[in-house]
Image (spheres, rainbow, N blue to C red):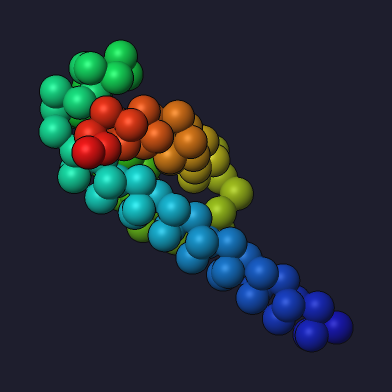
Amino acid sequence: MYDVFALQGLITLGATLVLFVLKAWAFVDSLSHRAEAFVAADKLTKPAWTIILGVSLAAHMLLWGSGPINLLSLIGTVAAIVYLVDVRPALRSLTRR
């Protein structure tokens, strides 16, 4: 019986760590691009993405114990995925040499 709960705890911890790394990667990447690139790519501004991803990362750290499945974590995960799948490739295509 306890083995099932231990496995569930490990899976939850793994998902929490993966989502934390995903959000941190998106946040750091948003800081590494120039503000003009966001405008040129016709995306939200750099401050907007930085605030969205920063709040997402902070909420994830504050709510670490409640697991990866809570409303703020899910919203932040969606924001990070949208940034990494849509915004980041557009920014990289503009700054590629």
